[in-house]
Amino acid sequence: MNRTIILSAYCAALAAPFTAPFALADAGTAHTDLRPDDHAPIGVMGDHMHAAGEFMFSYRYMRMNMSDMLQGSSDISASDIATTIANPFAPPATVRVVPKEMTTNMHMLGFMYAPNDDITLMAMLNYLERDMDLTTFEGMMGDTVLGQFSTEVSGLADSKLGLLYRLYDSANHHLHFNLSWLIDSGSNNETDDVLTPMNMRMTMRLPYSMQLGSGSDQAEFGLTYTGKNQQFSWGGQVLTTTPLERNDEGYTVGDKYSITSWLAYQLPQSTSLSLRLIYNHSEDIKGQDSQITAPVTTANPANYGGHNLQAAIGVNTVLMNKHRIGLEYQTPINYHVNAVQMDMDNMLTLGYQLAF
Image (cartoon, rainbow, N blue to C red; front, side, top):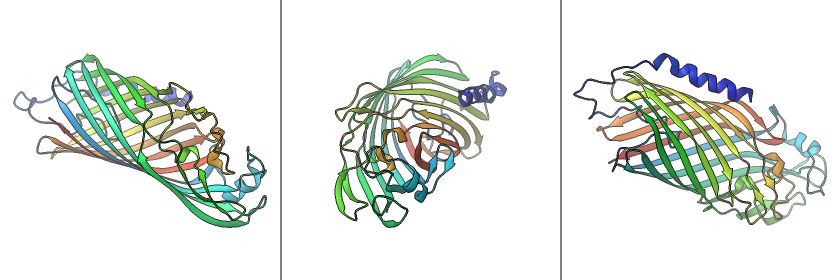
């Protein structure tokens, strides 16, 4: 709660110096030249609306890297996990398989259409590739390493249909309501070969973090504010995501809350630089998939959720007055996880947008 208050204050302070009216541009260019910062940094979704009859196509590539393990906010070694962290599916009494590294690649296709000036519709299709390296410890106890192995999955992830509704609009300030339906279109029964503590190779259902979908529909709603003057643009977004039902496997992913705010500075040559802060909070998994019972940290529903504060720097550019390209690099400032989980290293987002 303290971090939420701090970030809310940060958003207000960020916008305060720029809230007085400014002339946006001279009359000869105001309606013809696209600003690179007309949209938020590329890592922000549902940040802008369109004029009646306008379409937009977008593509984003996102890559997230994770490594090492955290217990709360403190580092914990793989051997300490293997000897001290209880396995809820005992025997064995302690966790015997520990994640080492994980890479997630997401390819996101987006479509937006405005039937009128007050409503913009959007749709997103997501394709995921996940790869995790793990360490298996030998036998029922101790910290003797048996070997390493990898699991990987790829395929269609959960999709999104959304609506943006204009609440306020002026030359310098804009506010809209975000409402989306996250559709259960990704698989949540993916399997792969694993190395067991008994030195056997077995095909098992993979833990929750390696599944492609949540298994249930979810609702997302929130508010987005943006502002600008001749040289700067700024904004903030608050979103909440909650599952609408328990899935067929008997569990639901946790509720998620996010707050982000950004400031962008326009450079010559149709380019802008941005700085963004992101606060995320998520709950643990409720319920359990009866087929996910391996002695690995990621099989325990309690080892999900937490909160973190992240910072991102980005660049946007406009080519030929219609093609917008964005790049953003994101890294944690502070990370606190429920129980024992992997630590996020960084995330890179590269995107392309075309409105017509």
